[in-house]
Image (cartoon, rainbow, N blue to C red; front, side):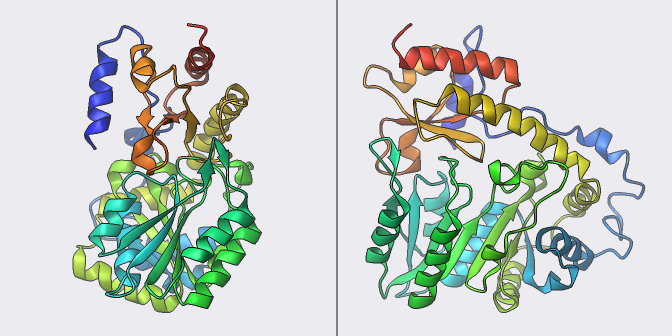
Length: 367
């Protein structure tokens, strides 16, 4: 999106700025050094496992995320999280049943992905007057919008950009509504492993049983988890029946995943300390952000962002002139003209502290 290039250009003109508009963790792995530890050639048969091919990688994913390697037939590989979402929408959206109900604020590219699949997005705001809508009230609102033209519900866990988690009871009731209306629940786990539900960095958490329901399709990407967005690799977990259908869609729209990406992903799953270190660094910044923004917005419990309202006296341009790169809230839904999205994972702790201190002073009108 051009908005990122514009932000980068404007920040580059300043003597001091904070690159908080990007979604990367501030310390990404050195892939060259990491690859030195892989004992087999990268571009060759069998590079990502002894057996080679995609099945061993699927088995490893099922083992790590589902705790059962034998369930690899529920795993579909894809070219990143965006591609995984596209496959799901293309499977579940049909002529006459094309409405996709989305809780907002939402990931900024989501409307285009839904539109590409022939869907019509129905935005349901989860944020009102700077506070989260209570789940019972939000559930009633969602239920009132479901109808004969509904195709799917979309939920991000944790939410992007709010960073909150839906309660298990809320998700169970969403699943019940989906069964009642015979529609899919598509869950976006782009920030899986980065949140307060998964604070044990030494042990990678499996997908909770709740999300392994046959009505749910779960989409994952490795770009955040492993810090390798250029690898273009993700996967979908769904029922075996839906997985087979998604696999056919994938085969008809894309070539097989590249060997390099599969090598890297498999290596990270084998050497889990590479992921643990990223998650440890993440929690440092999350806790700093929560402490600094306690009085300013719904605090994120996961994900890489905070979504905060600005007072009328402060504009996005004011923040940019101060060297703080944020993204316009209007990109995340129709109700958020006075909001900005701030990424808290692009800077090390000391610089993040400095940025948050500057931000809160600007909000308070002290500068």
